[in-house]
Length: 181
Length: 244
Picture 1 (cartoon, helix red, strand yellow):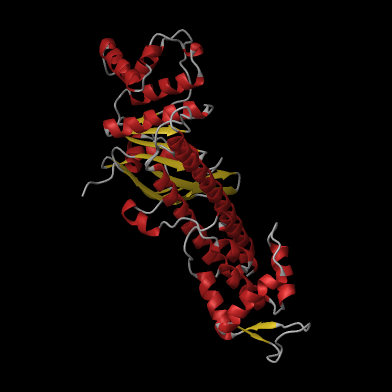
Picture 2 (cartoon, rainbow over the protein chains, first blue to last red):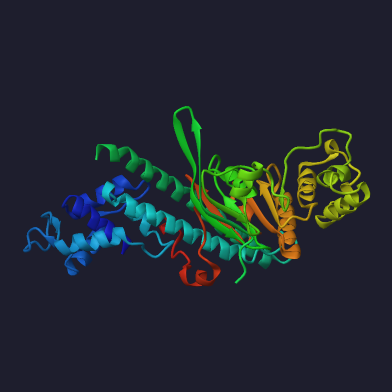
């Protein structure tokens, strides 16, 4: 769903066809190599929901480029996705940041707070059973459990730090932009 | 319903450097119960130390309220000047003035004015024993490792048996094993004595032993949801590669 909504966001930003949309996604996410064929299933799903439509409705297959335009319902669906929190820790926020506009930043700032809170909840859950000290010479199972717990906590710390950086940058962008209106 | 031991409500604090105002704390609120071991995670210069100092009554805030054990610390600071509340223990980082001072005397220092020497020593011995450091009673500061110094500092902070212990980065400069040892002691202090422990650390794994973890950045404090609601909101990530 989140990838589909990101594709929708790009279509709203500027109508496009599969390969071109894939290139635009790849240009925004370092290390990602989305192919044109990977974008088509998302476009077809969006078309089925009535959120995008083909510019030439007779174009089905072949070499011709099929350009997709957003519909009114698609714009509304995209706004709802961007403005409201998604289930935490699932990666929707990553895609929202990728296709955000300045107008969406206040909602996203709030969502970074909620995501950070979900990370803290997760840490609290993990730390509720801190276990004993690492003792690899004893049974491996408790050692493995502790190592996994610590790895999870470290990953959550990195995520919290990333969210804090994203939020600080968004707040700074809004502060600097507001005097100019 | 029990009232919290420590309560900060919409506390704000700014510093001025020339004509530039830096907002360090922006309407920060949290509560701490007796026997709770809470950690505040924040990167460098995130305002952790300022928050701890305000919670201890050492530093005034610009707005908001700080209530400790039913007493308004903001009004107290206005009446008597900002100073450490007698029922709050603050973990220092410095060693003794006199290099020749033995650690038992150093731990007992906060008690020497109100109590007789023998009684102060008795309580200092008990504080050292509580954290497994009674063997350091006759040692001198220069003879101690960083981990042993940390334990002595904790003993001194709890020697008056405060209701709240505050520690700013208590495991700084320690190895992983030493960190675990110190944090285990802090958790035991909270759970065995009912003393609340509030610490600030720059590293989340340091908080593995704490009951509650909060994060501070850009003046904002974010708290986990209350435990009763937690199970409903937690969902494990579907895939490592998906997380933002």
